[in-house]
Length: 408
Image 1 (spheres, one colour):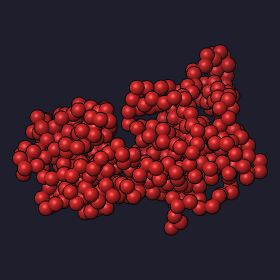
Image 2 (tube, one colour):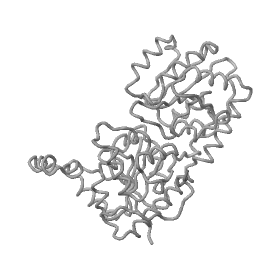
Image 3 (cartoon, rainbow, N blue to C red):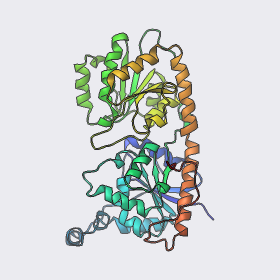
Image 4 (spheres, helix red, strand yellow):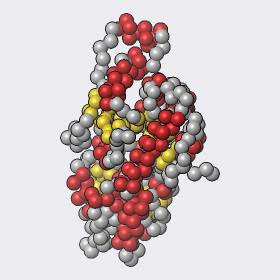
């Protein structure tokens, strides 16, 4: 048997916050992969040698209208993507297609149901939330679960939410973010002798990241640490509002919005900082984190993290040992956690060492990639055992793997 060929499908390749997908696709070693996308973004930041772009096809407006409004065909058909996707997968002789994000899987559902080879879909957080722009999204998710042999979740908490949405438990696999530890050297940190604490948060500036909570907590922390500074790495729609909040709290001159940073610049920021904040919170539409990549990166460098009991974060942080966990939207508790870490003798170094060890044990890239490739092989074997494979939901499951979601 030759090497397996995996198509990695991501609607946009790639948005700045999708570095974890790039790392995963680049790190595959026992299979060959090519990327399928509708648009290429940030090509210099995320170079990849084999990318297939699904072009926007020119369709006769009458045919387009008839397919959409009369025949009620799904978007993948009336937009002309179906045939293009089928032909490029056949040209590459793909054995399996890995679809990133659940809502993309819903869009591709008619293709998944008809293609004679298996697809797997991975969920990352926002794709488990309510989607007002997708009609009957929960029902379509259930049909997606029926159509694929395996479903990947980035954390146990996301897996539990998928079960509540109707995903069969025996189809779920945990596909954790893999961190390339060689890119994140450990820094032996000590409290700053001059009191110039450097606090950092790296994320998109959107509600579920809890940056407003971080600002309020930092304002309290500064009362006892007047030389402290707060660096916020990332961009997003909330930046003007957050800048106004910082000004209203009287901390604007000590809060630095530095934008999205290149990996080397972000590593420099981690290395020069003492505390990392990530107080994620659940959005009104139930949008929730898996395990934030920036939390794992910070932990890998030995940065003590103060975060919330939210989503998959407690799967990475052991409270009081590798970091600090507080309730969501509780800025006073977050400020207290920061002060606790700052005041405990030896806490920076000891907590940092344990944080590095936790990432090594649970999130190291080579181990996660090896497990992902075993899941690919499992899904392919399951499809081969189906009678017939085409257009039938897969019902038989292969033997257990270590990261199968446990039965409660």
